[in-house]
Length: 343
Image 1: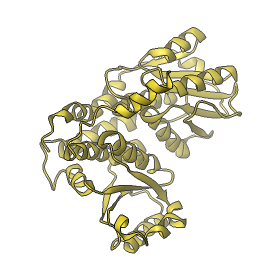
Image 2: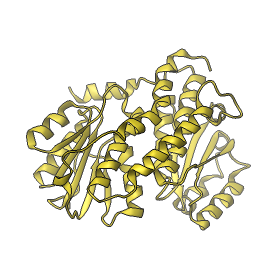
Image 3: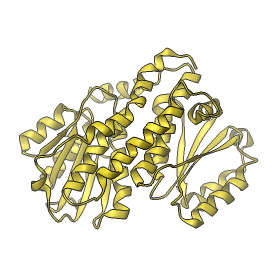
């Protein structure tokens, strides 16, 4: 693993705990406007900008009395209205789907707040009189999840929707700083789980399994990071749903099955029956797939546990790119697609 072109991404990953720490210093002078009784919360974004919404949706299952919906589209649900808190997230501020969704939300009378580093989204929000949470714009979106989540957690805590958000963020900083010591390049196998995972994934097809509710978004994050950083296919699913369909698909063709590596995301708070399902499922497929890797969460709060599951995946996807001799940072296909769409 000596590909120096990975240094940029590795630097981004190293700085994730500090993204949370620096965000904790932010102050919001516009929260009074948003202290209302909402019927629903809609978070609209794509790619790395949407992961924060997925985490918020997961937090809402435990803390929120109204539903949180994540919207990844040009259009928005019909139910969005003046009783909706609409959160538009675009790291660049120029994501065309998010800009379209923002315009519709405004037209349907929603209360809107935008999270961005600038761009057209900020211009539109200022023009329309909505508040903007401004974050630094010197990263790539998938490496800015701390900047795209922490301010939202604090904002929603300040308007009374979530509780103990800052405490959870502080714990997340501590957990990630501890993990980082074992994940960074200076750490070697076996202590460095991310490097070990990268070696096992090389030449294989990664299948990431999480759990509906808590680690579903973490599994999606792993999948997306392998796609964008490693430039290779990866897929994900969740328990218990996968036990009602996907598990049946491990009989043929053998030449593909023996290239599959399952990454199993485990959390101590998983439902007891789900834990049992994981064990039984692994026993069914262990002789048919190349490998099964388990990643266990750390920490107490949902936020700390979530990021302790995704941080090893961020590093593993970068080390996998290095194994393939690929620069993990550029996403040329996405850039090309955007240019073609603009024609």
